[in-house]
Length: 183
Image (cartoon, rainbow, N blue to C red):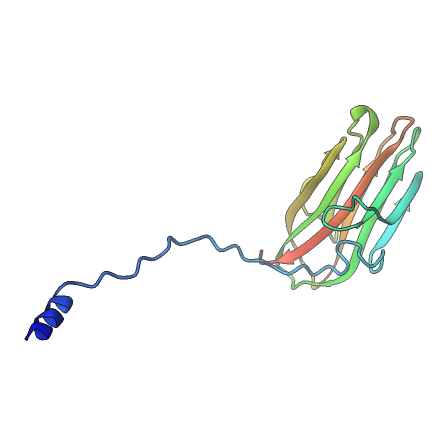
């Protein structure tokens, strides 16, 4: 009888549900469609098109590293009387027409004298993926934006433009480029 009463008492009271955790915001992680986005295997498949007086450019390795690894793309301008442009691009990206893409790159710069006469802008095809960003001397910053594409095959470009610099020139580092869909 005691067991029967214990059983009846146990089920007479409502059983509390297991407390649930508050809903958390789950951020969808999307894939980077760029190859060699952090220059770990050299320049390929990137293409760098250069106009103007760039004293040094290319993929370098440093113990201090780039943004998240030891490799990075570096450009140094010694343009004391003219401007120069570097377009670092990757073609053949398959993105369905009408898709909005997220694009970004991490940029660091050293401009003696604090001048901000260098800018960087990201493009998908000929569409800007965020506004141009003026660079002065600063550590790594993320330049990013969104763009909607109108075709199925695309080119992503990181365009660095340097106006006249001081006698020490200016240096810009590029690393961890990203193009993703549905982020």
